[in-house]
Length: 222
Image 1: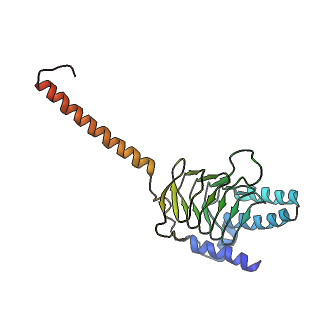
Image 2: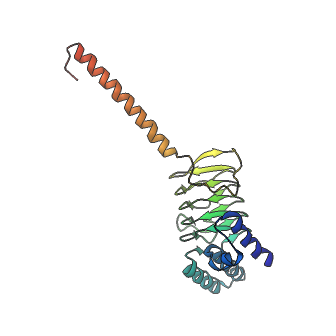
């Protein structure tokens, strides 16, 4: 237990350059408090003491703004940065060394039974405001970009952005856990708009040229 507590604290120093002291981290980091409360709630949940587990979960939600269902399975060195609004569903499974940011939802897509929440494998990063929905798997070392909505499996060593989420990097350079530049990601939607703008500009130039030729030929039909 004490080794796990120390790991939870150490990962804060590794991931957050604003962390200055153990006392500060222990007393002021809501993500850390939510994880510790969940570990207690999950222990009751595994013993079929569901009501007590939910009470602990709801008290933690009230104080931290982070909602983790006591049934969720969370691995070692899980880091929630600025966790307000994070929601993690009952059948969610999270591996080791996973990082999530504020506003992330690891939820379901309806009223289906059984496994209905995502599985997040080791070393994944889920950026600000991302929604990962349904019984899907986010592969090892993968990133989900800020604001993305992911509805399909993501293979290992991939980067997903957009609504719906699209894979923009796969089997490239391995994602480093200390690489928190999750705002600096490819934008397939923006790239598509840029391509369309170029095409429109080209068509407009051709139309102007056509008008000039018609005018030179004395044809005023355009």
